[in-house]
Length: 200
Image (cartoon, rainbow, N blue to C red; front, top):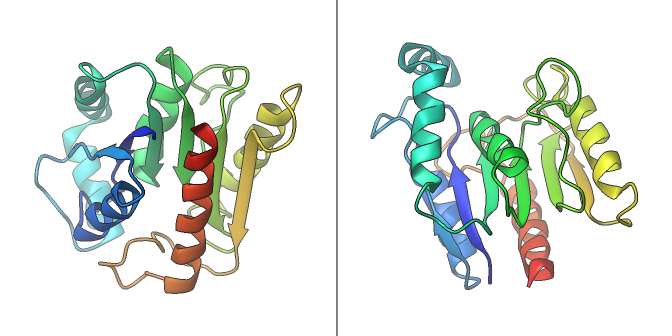
């Protein structure tokens, strides 16, 4: 079974994020859900982005680092949207990662915004909707394609996976939000479980 750190999206550690973590725990996995906003939950993406700006990126990075400091090296890093920043950064820079699950966001692995090269052989799944303005229309989908191809290069198919769902919803796997899409969320969860099962 895997030990997972799941970072919340920009609206905070919502009931929907907690419920998703519980779904993974039901499969026998250990899931940690750090609260980078320290109890604050917003009612909109815009308010969440304002809160993120008020807290500041350096503080948020420090909180993410503290959240994993006492955990084993062999973690699976997962994140929803804003939380992908912490998950992907740690997967790429903290030695020992077992895998990465990137939901509705993806950072480039080359260029000025990159955290560095993708670790050889590190499994990754990226999920997002094909008309989501934050994922498909802001460059994340292109970054995800590059990441999946890079992860597969020399390591065999299936190390890097990209799943694109029809629709324009952001945060579609959070059942506590109006953007929730039950069918897409169920498929995302099924694919996530299969990914974790392959890790052993």
